[in-house]
Image (tube, rainbow, N blue to C red):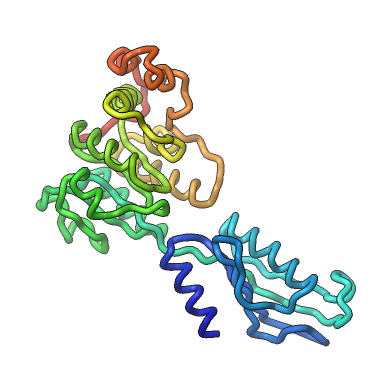
Length: 292
């Protein structure tokens, strides 16, 4: 039990997903009793047992499914009739996903950042706010959040983001947005979102790429958020956090990102310049940047 508890703690501290099976009820002859546990780690290895053989294989299938969809479930099996095991009893096994609280690094402390930080904390994120303006990046505004009083690029190495961290760029200045994107896109991240119009995103990505080729943009979401027609800071926060939730659960959603659009590919390939691409008009009613 001590070894398994330590393994669960290691999994939580790693920021990765796993799942845990616990025998909660048995009847008749069974290979394990109530309280037996089986842990599935993020790398696919296991610790513990719920009985071996066919019942363990069935439970492993449920553990893998729980890692994928993040949902708990009850696995009930008749060992004789369903699984052909000679012991012939019945087992009920509770399967629960295990995932550490994930960090959302919010770069900026304006109106959108304030609304987004509150909404993100409400759905389980641990929020770190980065902004050197101490009158805005204040404890009374960002209750329960870690605060870093630095400009985003300067904070990058101090924060040491991992591949499990979520990063959101919503600063008050396009220069800071560009510097933040340039710094954090080259560091590990699970998600990197940047607010702005399509024109702004094309310009920034083109300028950054021209200085030094960009790494993979598969985890970049710019413009950030889901296509909800959001306008106010509070609505934009809903759009952004809804995107985080959809990605956390692996659900398809109407993202505003233009990462796979031909216009961006033309900019990054050098076919057209960033400034030429930036003259493309943003779609009416979308991606409006409120004052921060």
